[in-house]
Length: 429
Ligand SMILES: NC(=O)c1ccc[n+]([C@@H]2O[C@H](COP(=O)([O-])OP(=O)(O)OC[C@H]3O[C@@H](n4cnc5c(N)ncnc54)[C@H](O)[C@@H]3O)[C@@H](O)[C@H]2O)c1
Ligand SMILES: N[C@H](CO)Cc1c[nH]c[nH+]1
Ligand SMILES: [Zn+2]
Image (cartoon, rainbow, N blue to C red):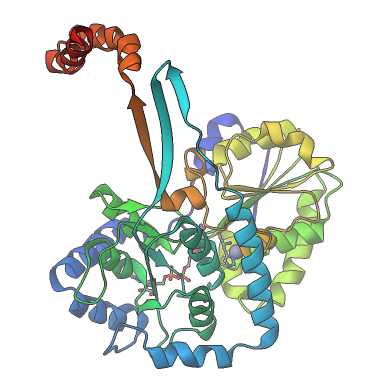
């Protein structure tokens, strides 16, 4: 990890730029994939599966037999863990249901909102380098609480055409059985425009690598709804002198192991911390099965020593990390300083992987600085909020003139007339 000491503010904009792989051709490549899927449908999906995932697929749909055999391949400790995580995620997302009150803005004028589920949703579950079955819980549970009618799932399969049994088990355990063996940008294109076998959905959800995220961005430009840009994982840790270097190193590595394009950042006001972290990081890295991936991400990452914790927060707010860990004494006291972050982890014992799997919060979060303007996935992501209003005769008498005056000032006399014609009738009664 590169080390910076009190970099001048003029350099911050450069520092907060995320690493990008294959950036030059990314957009062009993904555009081509999307166009090909639009034109050739399933045939294009099978060609891309062969090209990128080295699998020759006859059928894109996961069969009933595949679904039924998954459970037997999952050991009971994992089943228990999945059910505990699912219960916590369900509890947290159920708490997001809020009853919308009707408000009388003027006598006889009532306004309220109603949450209505998005009918058809498509979930993308990453499976390129690791089978992220936990993402099914993060997307499937709020979709079901919201009441979405049709939930389909796309995920890449292995070279033998098999989907990891933990993905099949988790999905079917939730009752999601419409599963397609397709990954990458082509899966997003399929759910956006539909193919012979994959239905077009109303909104696409789920994180993924740069191809997936770029595809979501491009289909969104064409009017397809997406949850948020949730790309390569990242974590930013703010640590003071009391932080535990081994804990921090473990958190940095937990996100570094996601992909070579992940980025992990440490900000500290303790001059001795970078050396301690380096030592611990090297020790922990060596024993990781995904050492090579994590190593590459670490090379794209950095440590900054600032002369105060306040300065660390200023930088962090500009970076707008997906995950922010406060390894600071009395971390709660700093909450007010957080302007931009996807999800925040307070204190030395709140490891980021708790949020990834089981504490209850959602792990589908904005990356690449989008935490400045976007929230992570929540129950709200799966509903539309429709507004309603009801105006009585008495209500129109009180609000009517206001509407008429404003409509006339906007030179929209038909708008004005919609009120006047009614008021006339009321006055003649
Ligand atoms: N932000 C979040 O909330 C969040 C949550 C979980 C995971 N993630 C991120 O999801 C990502 C998962 O990535 P992954 O790669 O393991 O799985 P993935 O499922 O996102 O992508 C795999 C697919 O990428 C396509 N692909 C691979 N190489 C390609 C190429 N050269 N050209 C075109 N397409 C290609 C293939 O079709 C493959 O099926 C990681 O970057 C991880 O950090 C983010
Ligand atoms: N850290 C990822 C979100 O950026 C989520 C995840 C899934 N599995 C493990 N981690
Ligand atoms: Zn993770």
